[in-house]
Picture 1 (cartoon, rainbow, N blue to C red):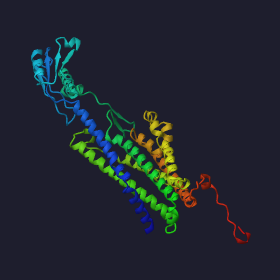
Picture 2 (picture 1 turned 90 degrees about the horizontal axis):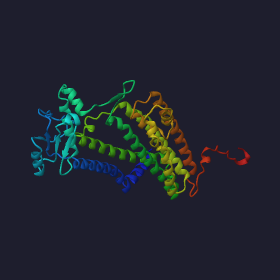
Picture 3 (picture 1 turned 60 degrees about the horizontal axis):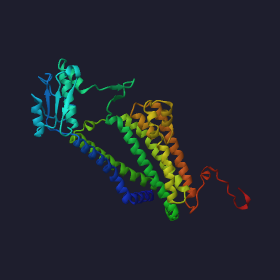
Picture 4 (picture 1 turned 180 degrees about the horizontal axis):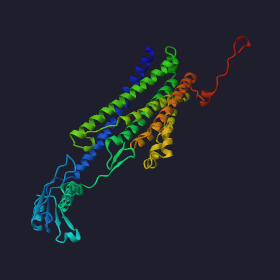
Length: 410
């Protein structure tokens, strides 16, 4: 048992301290941070909180109600009323306001409002002015109805069983399965690729022949798998820590409502784990089996490029799965081993999966995982000492021929 952990520790250190792993740890957070910064910069460039003027020629805003806040973190643009267009123009030319609106005298017939500016005003200012107009046009209604008219309606859709609720804008709880599914597939393919290359590399440079003299094949392969699992767990923990920190900063310091008081459904998490864990074991074992059949590292990289494609099938069919997540196609992809992770992630984002489908998919994944482990063990035993020779896949399923014993007996 101590040899198994030595192999696992060696495999872990060998990959974790590589430059590629360090780049992988920081690359995704840096990319996400860059995208967030770019979005914030673009929002800042399109926002202007300087005062905005208006000239009311119809008396609509004689006793104005303030524009409603759309979010707790919204910052209001000061709205200044002018008696005449000349006064508003003078204030615009002097830089006191960023623009001004002119409500025509025949507004109730034509609904004409003119915007005057030297430089295009911020989008936040124009949206606020239209909310300002809406709530004052609805001044004869109760404050609650006026607020709903100004801010618009929010359509809420519920599943027939009442378990799932869907808003116009997706919540963190809804998109979590998609994020987790794509992250898992990325980590899964990365882990299997690393394990595949590790087996082929040691077979190619004949290190395997030396190792099996001091450690059993089962301990050697188990240690390799444990080491690769540890590498990917480290990667997932690092990314998860970054995600939690980012959500905390976005919700508490940047005031982004999407990250404030996030909630994750335990049932959704358990559903994902029930399918993803056996899938991880199955793909890792298959990578080991493939590693024993290949000759060099370059060939293993080409094989991994082919293996990626079946996992992406649900992404190619997402436009078909989303409108009807309970269609026969969606159910079929949920039960198939390689398409299950992303299909379950997509379907869990748009509704609850029936329990029988989750249980059946998990059972199929587990059975395939056990079969893959058996196949990997057989492939490793047959092909570990075949230096420069490709192992034919038919040999893995061929029944071993009986060996002749001295004296002609079988």
